[in-house]
Length: 252
Image (cartoon, rainbow, N blue to C red; front, top):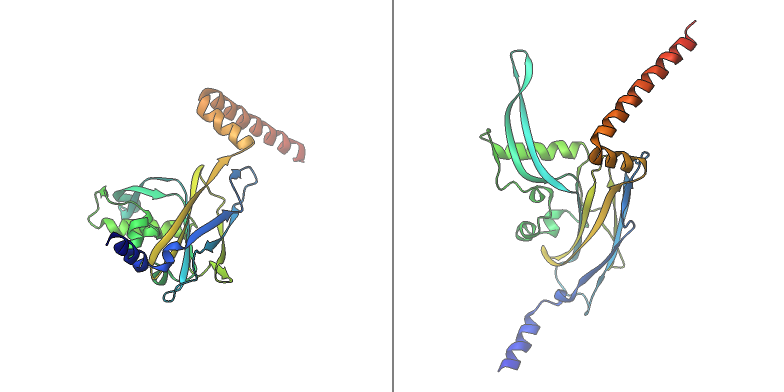
């Protein structure tokens, strides 16, 4: 009886439960230098199967890249007494500094709302706004404003149908990291779905760190703030003196 139940359970399990993701990244880390203008990350991989692909919904792939998160205060300005002033503010628990989503098809076709809620895949779900606090009555509008502003500046990106398939198992996509990056670990997640269900997923990390002179200056500002302040003042004085000397030389 037990053997019969186990056999029935195995036969009832969908065939796509044996599908897994094997993926790689073109960069293992990113260095921020003086000439840093952004970076493009190639994310590629394949779907490994233990059996032929099952009939039914097509396989889809979703890729997300998430930067370090931090609490955010969103303020609303109002025109009062002839000037713009902050009238209302809302504190959001945590929002990624950068978030990009790429997929093989529109997300409404590739992902169910239940699995989106479970894995926090879409950009609105990536923002943790459970404990919103503030003075505003319409707090969700402040979250929508944050999404709109960060999308406009390129920090939040949704590129549906940008993951390409080859030979039904190989996939690839390119995610562009902007020049304005903060240091930290950037999470790369890959999701394999069928019929809106996540059947497998994988996570990798890309460290983003300052390098070279930028790293030395940053470390000096944190470890020896007095020396950093004196150096900054000295450089400002030197720059002013050099500008004045140049003006005297070129003045007729």
